[in-house]
Length: 336
Image 1 (cartoon, rainbow, N blue to C red):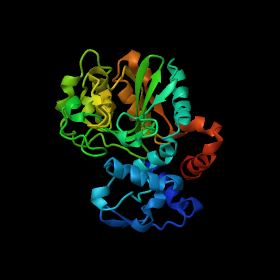
Image 2 (spheres, rainbow, N blue to C red; image 1 turned 90 degrees about the horizontal axis):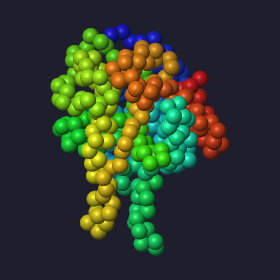
Image 3 (cartoon, rainbow, N blue to C red; image 1 turned 180 degrees about the vertical axis):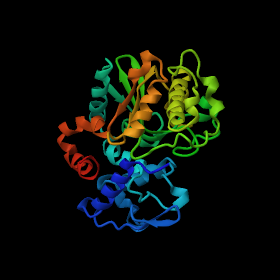
């Protein structure tokens, strides 16, 4: 498949912006798939592919939860220096706000209003359990303070009969995830994040397509496990839908395993989910694919699968002075 105009445009743009101070003098000609590339920051400088205030925190977060960086094993380095990495794109947009309850809430409240849902609280991540701690002075566990998880998986082996449930590799995962409450309802908010991706309709069918057929019952929002799902990105979107539905149906046990404090473990409360698929406006080809996927959803559930641009999702941050530097970075690097 020929490279899309959008991808070519973004590659040229990102290479030009390497000279901007936001990259702090990062050099290109890094290794990607065994070759030196102009659009890849060299390994010694690859950390500069991330927004400066999140760099160390992101490294520690990925190490803490044994999360795989994109292309980590192929290129033997991380984070990737690839300027068009959607994982880097996602982290640069969302990681800086992950511990700010009010900022995350403001972001999803705007979306909830579009479908008549009033989110009133963002809840701690059900899987990032090492963010919390036991307060010796208060003599009680202090809640996890992480409100966005990255590379989210949850009991994939039990929920979808998959063989792995490692974050970011070899299983159904979601780029970012928010857990929220609207009144008495508990909502799962998976966020699939794309940047310059495009998919060849003539590509070979995906593996394990038939594994998921049995999970599409009468209560699924999917009309059926369509032949469309034999191809990407529909296979990915469909599996994410099924994972959320299985979590809602089965309420798996989540929390921190601790012999001293078994109260850390509890069933996951979940009633509904809002599936967010983030694609830049310029990637018209992929946005058209998302609309094809939405057509595979039952009509009454379609509003709960939203196609958004990164700017739309983060627009509420423009009203928060604390995030003016982040917005300026994103505008300089990606949005303008």
